[in-house]
Length: 146
Image (cartoon, rainbow, N blue to C red):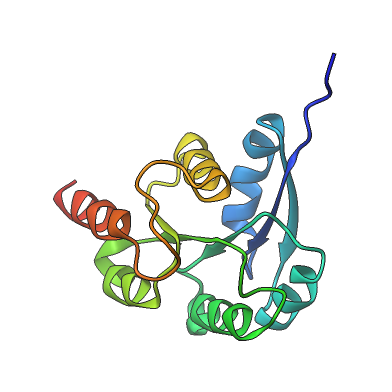
């Protein structure tokens, strides 16, 4: 019987609240998580080549923006797909403009986050080449209607 290999994901969350609420369910779903509390730490952890990065884009002081920009400017982080956890009413436009690979609007139910991770790791339905992703506009529009 083949052993299931966990998906390695780095989670960028300065305060750890969102990470704390999602870590257990994601681990049970086969996600191996590491956590970065700052943009600098995210760049260091990117050297371990996670298969995806989840950034809490609602962190104060634009920490999410900075983490994303630093990852994209770093050779190791440039090719790693990124999922933003967003509040579309506050950060939606800014998150969309940053061109993450997927957006998950709040509420951040574990199944929604897991689905986004699986989609970016496997290149699932609707994913185009890196850049502004078509599903981001759809996710954002859907979240605004909700």
